[in-house]
Image (spheres, rainbow, N blue to C red):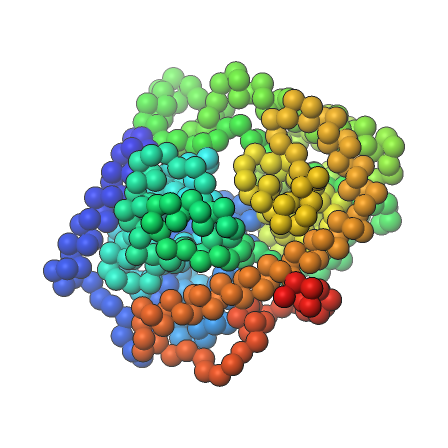
Length: 473
């Protein structure tokens, strides 16, 4: 099986669903029923960012539509990794070979909310984008609610871009930046501007994070530097029957195997670039800790990042590693917020630490961290994974974050509140879309403040909003 086969399979399922709907098959929402919504995303893999985003979407939708009026379901790839997540939402298993599942599962709901941040991109996996398009399009084919929530759009391979243009024109995609809106507008896909949904997430209290740091040798007072590396070079993941067969029969492609028929990009060039990236980070952090008194830790907010963390940890003499393989999202984000400064190649490593005002810099492989740093006014704290002088530049950026962490934290606070307001606006767009699709669905009356379109905020976020609301409005 190849990506092309998956794309053709999903396209055929969409076309067949359209015909069935025109012939009277399927069932629309009726007044008095709970609105059944399927949240389609990349959950149950211990990708902290993906899980946090969906947790907050569910809380926001319950707040806006009323928990008594909705029945929510969430896709997961592993129940063991998501068992304690998502409140009372039903979890449904998303198999690796997903077209039959989508064809069967989507029509059982009154709408789909696509959740994945990297929703329309070929950078990570055409299969994932195909799954997102298929989920939205199958709902739209039955004239049901079809919304992409907090989406990012970037370069798509030609066939995937054609699928997006053809099948998402009856969906509403709420993007998390203007750049993504531009990509989708070029394909004729309706959009509104929103943001990511991780901003309202509330982890365990920060004392939990401090306790975990103490157990790893922290003295309770030394500033903590947390580093979140990735493997920037083994994307995209592609489906391959040939590699699957060779792995099963000859033991080939073991190192690049992702799961079932999916394989990471691999080869000597990939490995060489990866080693250069890790070595540059390790050397820069080592040099920095020799001139600044810091306690260094590594964090894998996606379990796939654990190897990168362990590699750097070994180079630094065995500094602590916190992996989402061992810590759930409530635990790991608490640990991140207990730190002082951060350098991260994980977008959600940065985003989930920002409500804790952790001063952060980014080393990016794509536009997500780049867009975020520009939004914060911190383009000077942005580096590229393939910069030939990554080591030297990272040493300077670390020193800058250290010296200017109060300024950096202030910019972070303003950005958090701005994005809380954007997230509230997303809630308004979502409520309006529900009303358009289902005019008889009960909605709240009266004039409401922007905070009432958000999940309940923690006291810390409420205080942050009070501090920065006037300047962010």
